[in-house]
Length: 422
Image (cartoon, rainbow, N blue to C red):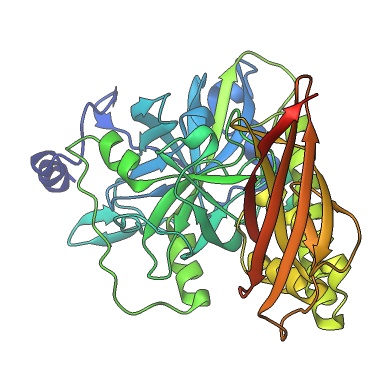
């Protein structure tokens, strides 16, 4: 035992160990933990001096026990416990940053035959994930975590999606948006790429953001946050892993983070408010149903319904999957190829549009797609219209003359000219 301790100390794997009597103690609490045990895992919880206030997710980034998670997952905790499989460990906060919403936890290990801990050359290790250089728009990613465990079960869950945007709400550059579904409890979990490396850290519901949006903290922010003494491994893109092997690898490094607050009170098991969770789940349900309806309308060639559904998806979620392509297809089939915008004295105005030729209808509205003759197969015909507008002082007139030779919806701006005083 003394030989092992001298090795650990020389490698810097053990720091500031508490002394109990003449020996040392590690972070291990117990094996075989079940959901019913969570309220009473620590001595303070058993004696009523602490309560389980929230649950979140995290993951090992080093083999000696460093764990990455969100700051809000551990905020206000008097005790932090992590569950790796059915094994519970007491964790300490090694670093935290509220603005980046990141926290680094550390568990200290001794050699023992526990679930998920391996002894290699006399040193205890845990499975860890490599960190990638980041992600790109359109890249497939997988998000793992423990969303709403008391409702959805305590087994880890995985969702798949693509990176939608490299910026978050209000244009934040440290957060990216994706369509892999997240809810309360996913916070702090890994977002991995197709090579099995970490591409970001999940934020279940980003504060100030749309409840229908799903966000991850990007790797640039993670690297700026991590202390220099943390010796993580960089992931190198190679052969893409099959989804089942990729998920299995990530799950081995996944942990559930338990936040114990001071004093006895009613247990709360989510990192977000119940209202936010309900709204997020309802939004996710509407979005998934809309995607299914859109696919069905495309197969049935119900173009009007497809346009309306994809308009809603693009407004609610932005560029997601093939939705933009479906939307353009529906507009082409319906002949919705043109949006007319009238400009008078440098401002957009609601001018009256009088179609002359090329229009399917006798009436058109500024700023909304209008129906033209033709469709996907007919191109190269003239489109003309007259625009009239009056403000408090002037009468304005404009003319639209163009030739339909494009594919998809196009915006045409008509600059109005004064024709006289009102």
